[in-house]
Amino acid sequence: QVQLVESGGGLVWAGDSLRLSCAASGRTFSNYDMGWFRQAPGKEREFVASISRSRSSTSYADSVKGRFTISRDNAKNTVYLRMNSLKPEDTAVYYCAARSGVGRYNYWGQGTQVTVSS
Image (tube, rainbow, N blue to C red; front, side, top):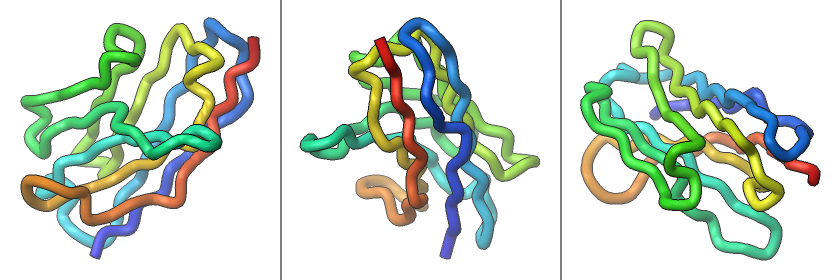
């Protein structure tokens, strides 16, 4: 079992930056691929970014490419999402997720709200 706790959300203006953090506990963090997802009101949850357990591979949704950066610190059991040039359409609850293999993510955090005002 892996427990994930997100933090760093808040209310910002368009063009501002935020850094989300996700602290993991319970199992060996470096054994898991990590991802960030988001869900806006009335919409399906969508993929934002992912990073492999070895940090050798990252992936981004087209909507955030060039603005968001995912990173991880395996020594601190933490994954980050740096969000620059935020837009109102980035407003959503952001979730951290972990998976031990390929396919679906096994573990999810409780989410952190990001609100971007224009």
